[in-house]
Amino acid sequence: MQTNFEKIVIGTALAFAASALLPIAKTTFRPLAEAGVQGGVDLINRGKSYIQLAREEVEDIIAEAKFERMKKQLDQEIALLDDTQE
Image: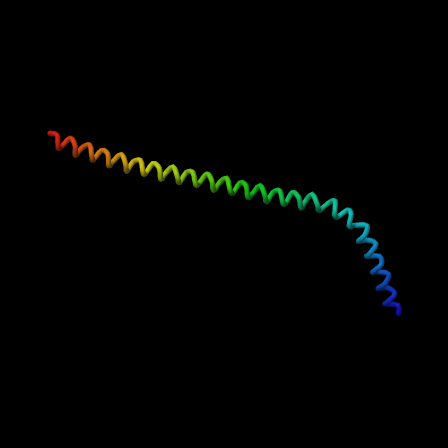
């Protein structure tokens, strides 16, 4: 009987403590959670930016390679025209 009474007293004390600490925990953890979410969003946006930058670099490399190939082909065609005119 004594142990049941102790359990009830402890349970009641914990319930009161939880109800008193809940608003404090809420005001403390909410800004932390918001900061965590904002940090995640910033990280995602930074990742998208890096991917876009890499994509542009690859497109530039491809465009330069196409230009060099086209220039080489035109040089060859001009050389052939010069050979036939002589």
